[in-house]
Amino acid sequence: MLDAPEPVKEAFTGDSLESVWHGAAPCPASWKRSMLDWFGPKVHEYYGSTEGAFISTIKADDWLEKGGSVGKPLETVEVLVVDDDGNRLTEPNTSGTLYFRNLMGTDFEYHKAPEKTAEAHLEPGVFTTGDIGFLDEDGYLWLSDRKIDMIISGGVNIYPAEIEAVIAKHDGVADVSVIGVPNEEYGEEVKAIVECSNGYTGDADFVREILQLCNGKLAGYKRPKSVDFIDQLPRTGTGKILKRTLREPYWEGHERQI
Image 1 (cartoon, one colour):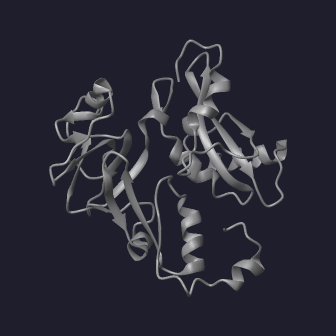
Image 2 (tube, helix red, strand yellow):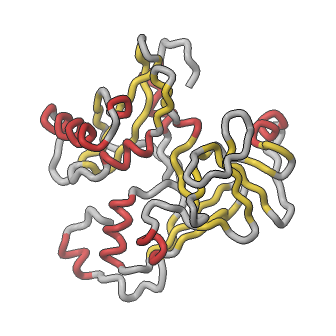
């Protein structure tokens, strides 16, 4: 919608809309601000999962104060932030694996997959979908990334979402996904895969612009070592990028299982 010609956007002001809700795949903050500028404070967000239904919501006005947050947990949900050893992290703004407890007493099992069910639970009724994030001092929930998408380079954890948010700000980027690809010395290195827009093409000059943008915004170990271009990023029916599909050709012939 944001790529629509200006006359098209000017013809629709959003006055007829009461509210717009979005969820599923994360929305870059810069894109959401553009939608709010267009429609006004009517674009609201929910966070949830197939396993746990709705977990949190955030209205447009609150998002403008807490841009990037997915809101406060519902009254029926308890959010726990847990470290790699299973210890609960209670200090605000401390990232860990997010676990959830439905205070209505409901739980779930994966169909004919008891081991997968057990892996998803910290204890009965307390489960994770693999997201990493934290609660701030005001109780708002923030997502850092998905654990399965985390890149480990030289023993350091790198979260693609932070890098994607920086690259997405470039006018020539329609969409972007950051993945880990093989590196003999460090195990993995960071690669950005970009969809072009606004007349940009995947040439060397555009690669340099993207890398320079990252140089000014990211620590050295987080910066992409390379940029590839794609006509369209593969997605699920709900809009989530299929990172496994993107990684597969780069890991072909390597021992590591993606």
